Image 1 (cartoon, rainbow, N blue to C red):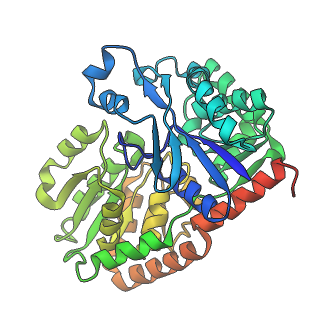
Image 2: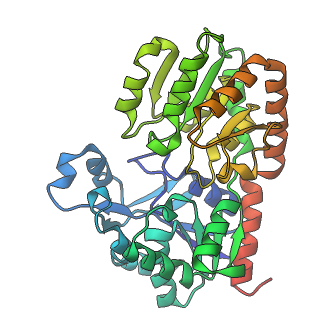
Length: 393
């Protein structure tokens, strides 16, 4: 079975942790005998944009071909405008940008299925490619790809999803949105993302004997308003009298960083911004923390919660979001009300005031995740989808 993966979210020299979940799935599929080639289109912008912004300059330096931990990856260019301008047409531009490279790949790697990650632009481009070669197309919905609305955007998403032989949603929440909004019925299947137990074991070894000396709350996220990092900061401020040694570490970067630093200005070194970190370093900080808290009110799935749970940490997420599939309220963590500091303070205070129960929650979380949420399990479910669209099941 030969699979062509199309995903603009994939590790590269521009961002080694971007789309790490897509890469992990590709490795897991290959471990089960599936042949995989990845086409990860890189944004291209006309002069002088690449010389004006560090991010666009990094894109221009990504090699056109590479092998990333054993996975062959091609990086053709496609026209993408800054600030998501004209994004509704991005799928068409991606198709035009990658078509010739896909034709070259097909001559030596006649793929059976095209698997696209995100509905737009990848799913749209994949639908056009699938029609060109009369191949089935599978689209995985990760969440953020359904957050932009508008007439033209909706038309593009409708085409992408409507053309797919099968749609994989990584959470029940996303499956419900896709079914309700686009009437896809039984073409939608839920296959949660996973994690690599080997990485978890290495992180635990790396932090042995180096646990945090004081109770520490950790968040790992892009710094966007919907992630709720500001709520954590406000909660830490409320809790400082009851827990004067409490620390808060924030891993990630993004447009909200300046506002968040200003919000935390009165907390001194109690709040530490660690910036973007390599994945192994992220896991080590998770292994060392006391509680993982990310009260995001717009979360399609949330692999970081899974990773923290696998490392034996109680987690805090929001009600009604993707993590609700695997965070058992009061048993492996807490599901708090969205945008509600009071609910968050209550959950954090309980975990910090009852360390034995917090530890028991973390152990239950670890058992749940390592039994049911690995990339091996994800690959098994994904291969069944491939067999179905190929008429082999």
